Image (cartoon, rainbow, N blue to C red; front, side, top):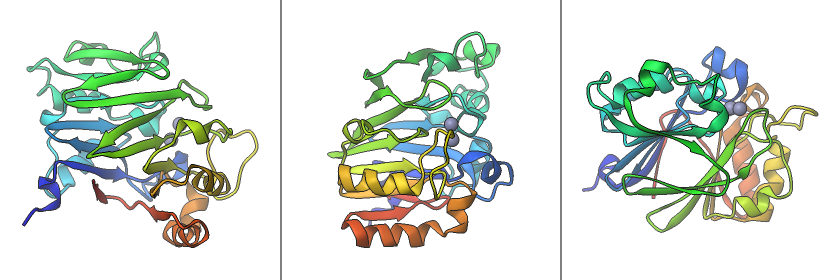
Length: 258
Ligand SMILES: [Zn+2]
Ligand SMILES: [Zn+2]
């Protein structure tokens, strides 16, 4: 029998918290996504507690086997644990290896990566819009820049013939529909209702995106307080009925196998 973690293509949600209060109060965990693609292991957006969620995973996730860490943007809920994960990936700096990908404004004068940790990794690469990158056997592409208070890119990649897209933090704009064409779309949905002047997606925006992209599968994550109070799994079920798309709400520790 094949157990889920021996399957070579999966994504594990090490956290589903979005926005400040759900993260600060740890109402949901904020460890990002661990992605396994064949022999390659990638960590995306290691927010606060990522290292703890790795150690608490069953089976344990060992940062020493990571090939890369990817930051979609520099915000704390996406980047807080990048330094400790670099220490893990490089075995405390004794094994110079791995790649860190992040937008240029996460790597400049006000970099989120400590100086000593910069020297530990094999390579640090600045992400640019609509470019293709490789780590191990894993290839991913950035979308054009999203609309968020810092440089932010969505990610697109193929998992076992499934086109997966990660729609990270952004405000809604119509071009998102083109940018995120995919079979499986992971969406960061922070608010239940749109909030003027705050560059995050609301569930209202997500309804529009799901209808117009029409992927086979949608996974909602990165929930703020208003989403949590409205019960994400119930919202997901209602949206599935409405659109005919398989929509589910991620939970901490959930693994999606491809
Ligand atoms: Zn966020
Ligand atoms: Zn953000």
